[in-house]
Length: 60
Image (tube, rainbow, N blue to C red; front, side, top):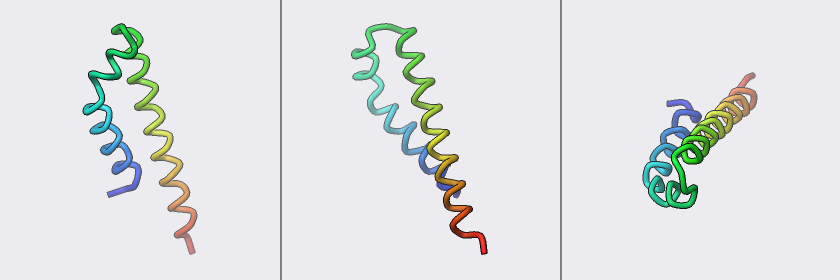
């Protein structure tokens, strides 16, 4: 399993566990949607950076 998949899985589980507090803090559906999209985008970018770094470090 690629590191990006592991990062994404852990991030989605963490978001699911913290969904209610996040929704309470944002106070609205549109703000919650924007937060969720930004969070998923950040997870994807973090996973891609990690994949590139690992690929670069392991090339002969």
